[in-house]
Image (cartoon, rainbow, N blue to C red; front, top):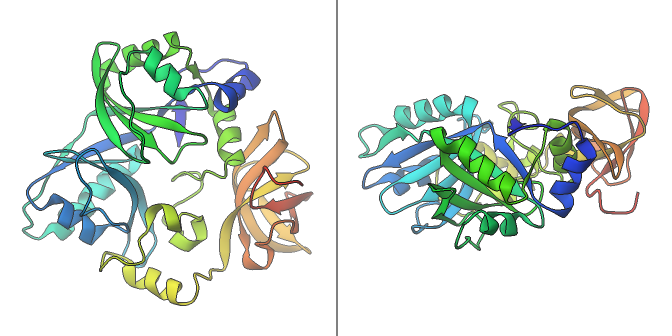
Length: 326
């Protein structure tokens, strides 16, 4: 889930900012600092992706899984010189901390709340907006990060791959978040609200934990295997289930897909095919460019692009890219 820094009534203007300029949102995320000499080795044994070889300034996305192989949280892992910073949804921080504490069994690692607000700037002019706000240098590689000054505040700038367009996530001291957001607005970043954000996310097939992914999901259902998982690393919590799925070719009964709609829908709307339940909508949006669209889970019989289904009784089409011809 996310919410805007501030919201205007002009959804089309906000949407254009995300597609053509620079959009600004405050994410409902938080951070956790992890220290201790074995911090990366420990995380490597816990998470779904390779993190033990990351060097300071590098980062990677990963998942925290249950022993049954379902998602507990999506994480961004950022390695610094003396600490590893974990970023995740604010309402998952306690669970992540509890899980890490439970499994450490004497490992020399420690955890502390990061006390950071998490902002995002994305769109074709996101880099220009940050530079205009005073950021001297920007990270280049995906999930790379660095410290920078913005509006007189020291912030962490991350090249983020989980946004609906090229952009950056900023970790900002909580008491400076308003000032940093004001500096970004002054640099032409446009605050956008939930409606525009959802339209941009759905168009980009960009699922987020909370609205689109939860504890009931398996990794291969979400389309995030490449983004958050290594098939060559050693054991980690939940690996056995994922390895079995890999061994069967990653075949699952349902998977997240895009949906071109003929009528507006809402999250939770039922997807049907030939009169039978075939899935449900997770995020629905009204795109100024494409009209009504959605993300949702559909049954494996309807995975293919172009499959005809119905959403809340109205005709719809399954897509694997909204940029492809209808």
